[in-house]
Amino acid sequence: MWFTKVSLKNPVFATMVMLAFVVLGVFSYQRLKVDQFPEIDFPVVVVTADYPGASPEIVESEVTKKIEEGVNSIAGINALTSRSYEGSAVVIIEFQLHIDGRKAAEDVREKVATIRTQLRTEVKEPRVLRFDPASRPVWSLAVLPDGDEATRQSAVELTTWADQTLKKRLENVRGVGAVTLVGATRREINIYLDPQALEAFGITPEQVAQAVRNENQDLPLGAVRSQAQDRVVQIDARMQRPEDFGRIIVARKNGAPVRVEQIARVQDGPQEVESLALYNGQRTLLMSVQ
Image (cartoon, rainbow, N blue to C red):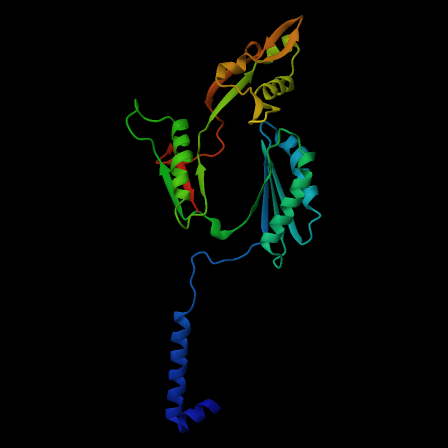
């Protein structure tokens, strides 16, 4: 009421006050920051680990629970959620809002690194990711093969070109943080075991995997030093052709070698589908730019 009385008695003063409020409002509005993706720190960390060929039950006991036990001692955890799928484990760690997201991610990485020796060798390196709303893709690109069916690139060739050429060029553009491929089809040598042949020779799948792993690697032998130069010596034992895998000796029965080609089928082809992208109802290769 007092402001109304003052305004009626001093109309000029009231007008000047209102104009001052209007000018202040316009000035503040012009400097008001508007961002499509405002910088908000959600202290959420996700740990993923792949265990190819393992059932959800084995993934839970051999991967998920060990990761949970390892990160559970970190201070400031608000909620811990896990998912066990066929061949992969996902652990979501939600921290209290006052916890810094970067610090939380570093703590999780340290804990995951300490339990890495407890995981089986078949388990791939766990990935620690921090939830960031600003990391969502700002541009998506569908990569399609060019030409007719006779000259068109295969899915493997298209993925190789996109990964080694187009992806690197996009990553060099100023302002681009990362480029990810969705629906990629990479080359892979698959070895399909014959259960009847394994039983006949008394060989286990673990023996086959160990034999392939031992034969397909480069072995350092040391160095040859002289007064003029030093030379590093190593054995280049990696397989160069798909048929070389079939000649690997797995075991010996009655003095005769048992090779991979006798108990399995070696196929050179695309890897198993890990992600899928569709364009007009057809499979394609999608590139997401962040």
